[in-house]
Image (cartoon, rainbow, N blue to C red):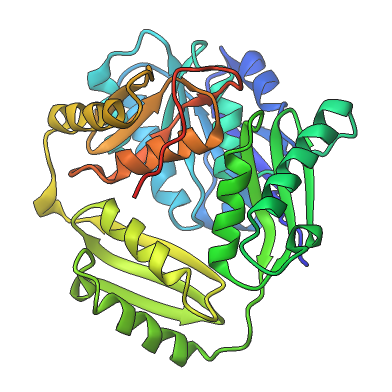
Length: 360
């Protein structure tokens, strides 16, 4: 089984906040490199850049130009662009920054601790396992939950290696279907004390099914689902990995499609590269009210802050479990007009402001 590895994260821009930002990023199990000049696409690809953290170089147009330039180049290698700005930035400017292709904007120093957590999940950094009593106990709690509700044959959990570090659970092993992987992820996310779940080491190796058979099965399934319009979607299958492209009316359409496709025999993974149709765009203020209202409906005791910038919904606040965090993200994605969700919600075990719900 091939281990996932990340070579480095580039930090570019201002020297003013260089030391504190670099110290914060050092929490990640990845090399951090400072650059003062831009690299072209080929250099980024050769040097295996996982992400770029741009520390706001100067106020005004220079930052906008830098964001547009870096975003354009990073699209070629599929790497995210994170921007660190001062905490007194106004919402109008944040809106413009998201419009320049920034993956996520972080206000410094207010979101100092959220930055490494978000970046680590985004580029799939593996937590370093620990043998401390608390980590061992949490790993065993996750295993017991999987065993009590196994989405497969008896003893399935014994085939999964579970390690934890600081509340971050890492899952490794080989399973035979994608829907089982999703189920295991959900079980781990709902375990009290878990702050994040990393499952890229959980490899799906299903029985041998040809790509043509998988494509035919997908077409048959999508053709009978009213909530998904197959006419607006294009799909390809390569060695069991399904890629969806095209336009959708909203992310709820894709969420339902992924749930269905994960159950098709032979599917190893699903890559979603769709975009929300421009005709379905809604005013940011309307989207924010819709998202906040939907979250309050399911989690009336929660205190989640919602901001929307050019259809990008930014969530912040505190919840008790990763499952609640994921559920709130799902609720957000289902609201009309949401183009993408930037989930900055922090998991604090023992916090009672939200309870897990069943979200369809």
